[in-house]
Image 1 (spheres, helix red, strand yellow):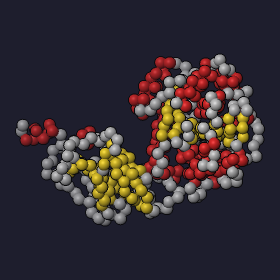
Image 2 (image 1 turned 60 degrees about the vertical axis):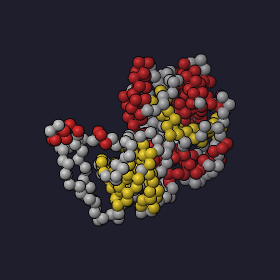
Image 3 (image 1 turned 120 degrees about the vertical axis):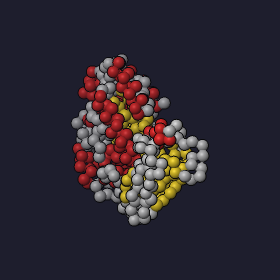
Image 4 (image 1 turned 90 degrees about the vertical axis):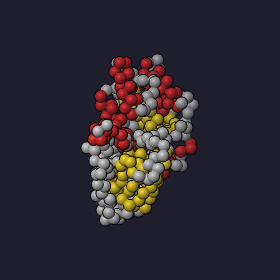
Length: 248
Length: 147
């Protein structure tokens, strides 16, 4: 397992929820995991640490004001290491517009710590910007969470277009590990979506789907992974199985 | 030529810098004896011809060096064993970058009226006036010849 980005340019598909709970599940399997929050909204950071403020975040690393080792914080509840985000990430495109090698900053910053972890997960922002490009160039491959609905296909199309542009314009080929079905309710709709994804894009769809389950939202409120907050819930069991399937 | 999104432009290279370019053509099937080549006109009007080699299934590739972000025109050509051109793809116009990936199914190209003596327009050094080679269907040819 290397650096993997959780990405979908459509919002509300449980990217952060998937990143958090897969990371926690891997940690429960004994893996050493680092989660990097690259979203200016800091959803992953807040879900883990509530309103705790951090002196240094991934922003400081990107702009060269902190070493990456100095911004890593550990979460006992999730049993993972985390690099928190902050709202200043929203201005990073302007700040680094003329920076030499602006698209490879995160890739280079991760080099000193790459080998210390069994897996590094990046929770990406849904918007396409410099941070998302950095995440993709730092990643060996990506996982795409989708909700089974019409617009989920649009999300996949956007990502495929982005990966194609990265390959053409920046010379990096990034693989797609597979698609995760999240927030599913209707099995018939899910089956249709899966057929469509396989037929149109020839992508792997993971067999463990994540159901739409209130336990997930409750876990967020308690700043816990769902497998700790409600271990017998359908979502907790699904995330545990999905984590094993993702690890391969 | 597509619009240029600066997010996908290598900030470590200046326009005109020499970069390696990987050209890939998918969905292409060649018969025995046929060859596929890339014909590329660079920003200086130089015509570069490179034979493409098979890589994965139904996929051919080649590599060359181009000047970053300069305008190029390129076309894929299928030749028989006598180097006679059988099929030509449309002409693509792009900016030189690290990878050019296209799909082409020659048999799916829309056939025009049978013109066995249709003129071919050769590219010039200062600029190309590429014209797509007409590809009549077999039925149209048989009707024309009275079979």
